[in-house]
Length: 210
Image (cartoon, rainbow, N blue to C red):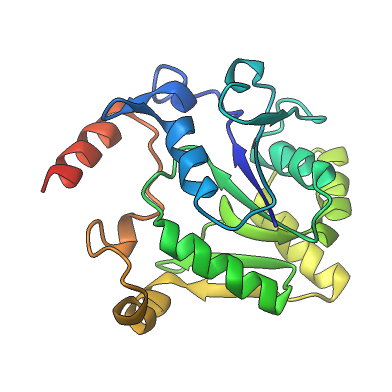
């Protein structure tokens, strides 16, 4: 399995480049590359037109520019030679390595079209595992000018007949935390907290110091 970090966003709410924003002295992109490098992956790359980040990992530039996360996902799946690829946003540093490892194992066993976490009933498509069968559906959506990730996933499942493996994070955590020893802090409801604003960095620094 390959892994791709989406780092092509505009970072308008942060006011500066999120990928290079330092949390406790470490840029978010470096944290995410280090996190994924702990896993049994074929490769870790950065999806987006970001030649300035090439010192952290290999860069896979977008073919569809200014199309949001779906454009980065297209470039990732197009570049991968693996059946499955993990795709994760650069601003999700609180997702535990242990959970990512468990999700990779599950995806490799089920080979679902998408292994998709849900938190409080909401899908988290920017921290998920995608089958390469998603690629033509993503390309079709982008060519039609539709950059909505969740809509693309649902349509691809209908058209391909492949299943979406929907994971309730609350249920998975309750059932497996005693065995997996995932961190108690921050709790799972914070795992998918995007670092969009300076206040998110401040909150995370306080949480980490507790």
